[in-house]
Length: 318
Picture 1 (cartoon, rainbow, N blue to C red):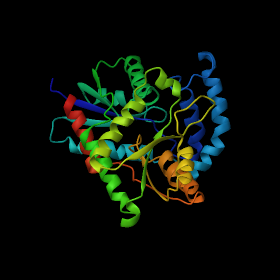
Picture 2 (cartoon, one colour):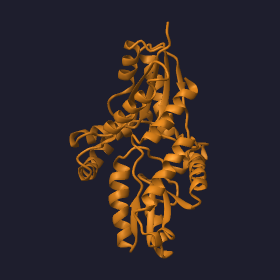
Picture 3 (cartoon, helix red, strand yellow):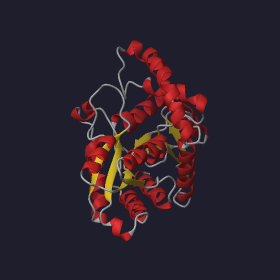
């Protein structure tokens, strides 16, 4: 049998319209890899209660960015661009599956079976490994693989924090968006890397997320010859989270006399609620109230140089 390689891009997913929000939140909080809500028996009932309570606020936030998440559309564009870039390298089919919103892993695995795929490569769209993102997606993929009786072997690309084309794409974004400031302002612009937060307990238990974030930042700063500060956004719940939080970082910078900030969404490769609402609206407004100007780098999305990085990752293991 001739080799036919299926590439699965793994992502979180997001509600595409207002009526999707509550169900998406339910799916998210039902995942014990992210958060354990009491005994396993009570996980889903508690998740349903949380989703019901949080849905109205989340719906308002999604309304501010067009009514829903663009993540499904952007991930589809990334998959299509990657498949096109691999066209001269062999027989590749590239699809994506989401952890908390369709298309789910079982559906896409069946599509791979029907297409006659002989080998699978699982490539998370999370550069930095975390058990709540890549780990949960890998866990779900293996479960669904076994559940539907799929016999196609899977190779996992665990993480890629220092992948050269990825870090170069980030550095290019930063250089491009520094141009939003005048030459005089650029000398004092503070780079701020904002990553999705995690409970501190994850790191205490050996999760490499922060270490891998620091790897990416070290490589990027080596290319830019400019230092930045790391902070963490999107935390929720009563547990102890990674620090400093992004709002706390903004408060501290204002106290230090900072006037101009370029924020880099370091753990995100696609625009979604955390970039389009939290950074571009919430944190931008907070900075303005503190007397600072905040701009943010554009998402990598289907940038050709970023797609080239994904192609390199695939070909390395294909």
